[in-house]
Length: 366
Image 1 (tube, rainbow, N blue to C red):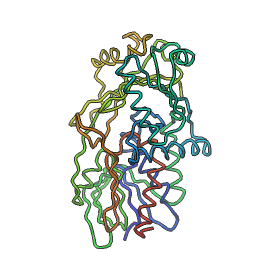
Image 2 (cartoon, rainbow, N blue to C red):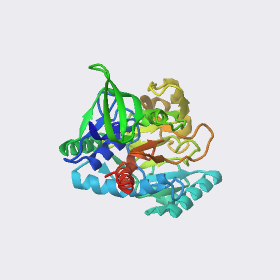
Image 3 (cartoon, rainbow, N blue to C red):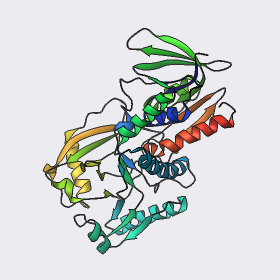
Image 4 (cartoon, rainbow, N blue to C red):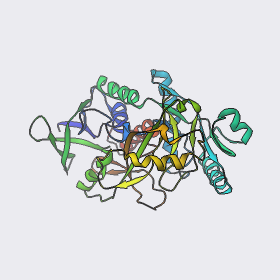
C-alpha cells in the first residue's frame, strides 16, 4: 500500500480527523480539491458554537454537538484559539412563536442540554434593550469561534505528526480492492496519478455523496445555499448576544450573529439550488432579510444591510422534508463515509473525529 490512511476533504471535519489519526507510524494524506483548506462549507457559515438545542434527542447531531461543544471550549482555552461564550436568545413575539420556543426547550431538555433558561420581557430588556421580544429562550453555552484558526490548528497538528495535505487534488475515481482502495487523483499541476490506501475516510462535504456512489452507496445530497447580509451604520453595536427567531423546517431562520471582531451579520436564509459553486449574493434579497428580521430587530433600517457572503450546505433533506441526521457509516474493508455534515458540523468536528477513531478501532483497523 502507498498509504495507511487517505482522507478526502480538508474542511474542518477532515482536518479534525487528520489531527486525531495522524501518527509517525502511519502514512496519512488529506486530499483537497481547492488551493487551500476550508474553502467551502467550513469557512462560509456563522462560526457559531452551537448548544445542541434543536436536534432530535439521541441523534448523532444532538450527541456530537453536545460533546463537540464541551470539547471546543476546552480545546480553545488550551490552545489559544479565539472563541467567546456569548450566549444566544431565541425570541418570541406571539403565541405561535411562544409555542415553538417551548418545543425547542422541551427538545433541549430531552437532549441533556445545560444552561438554558426562559427570559421574561424585563430580563430581555436588561440583556438586549434594543431588540423586540416578549419572551425568549436563552442558551448560555452558545458562542462564536474563529473557524480559520481552528482549522489551522488541526492542520498543524496533523502535519507535526507526519500527515500531509495535498491541495488541488480532485479524486476522480475510487475502487475497492481486496485489502484496501485504489484512488485516482486529478492534480492541477500534473497528470492524473493513482495510488492505494488501506483506509479511506470520505469527508468530502459537498462531494461526499459522489465518493460514496463510486463505492456503491447511493444517497442524494441537496445543495442548500445560505446568503448573509452585513449590518453597518453603527447598528452592529446594538446587540451583544446572538439573536435568533424560532427555527424553521429547513433551518434556524434568518438570525443575527456577531463575529469575534464585533461585526454583525444577518443570515443564512435557505435556497435550494442545483449549482454547489454558486456563491453569489443576490442584492435583491436584502428586502426579504429586512422584513424577516425587523420584527425582532426594530432598530434596523433597510439601508443598514449590505451583501456579504454565501455558503452551501450539503443537506440530506430536500425542500419540505423533516429532520435528517448526519449519516456516518462503515464500508468494509476499510472506508468510512460522512454524508450530510452540515450544521452543527463545525461544533461537532472534534467529537466526529473521536467517533471516527472509535469506529475504526471497533473494526480492528487501528
